[in-house]
Amino acid sequence: MKYHQVSEIQVSYSPNIMGTIVSTSESSYKVALNNWNLDTIEMFEEAKVLFLNNALKVIGIYSLSKGGISSSVEDIRLILSIALKSISTHIILIHNHPSTNLRPSKADMDITSKLKTACEFLEIKLLDHLIINKESYYSFADEGLL
Image (cartoon, helix red, strand yellow):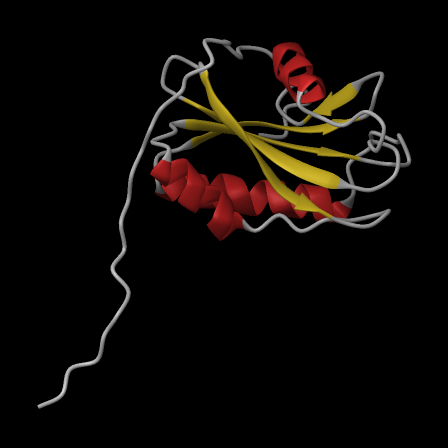
């Protein structure tokens, strides 16, 4: 009988905790801005995810996607796979609106709801979803939408 070769999956984890504690939407916004290219923030939509440990210390930030002028893709499976690999217990989804309008779209509301539900199954807390521009932000948590 002939056996087929398959890929071996290896998981490794090398934590490099930044020490930054994110406990408010404002502190999340500041971390996001420090990790965003402000020269392109009004050019195209981009999504990033902050991954946090149980003490709300930032484990890292992941550039999830870069899109067009009015949208980008937020793949829930990818977000959660990174959360699991980094042993994150909390996440914050962040994206910009190149128009600088901070009002969430229906698509923004839908992805937040889907991500929150998916996180609950894995006992990961979706702390917030921020929509940002250079001057300000919109927080789903602050608005009572989480």
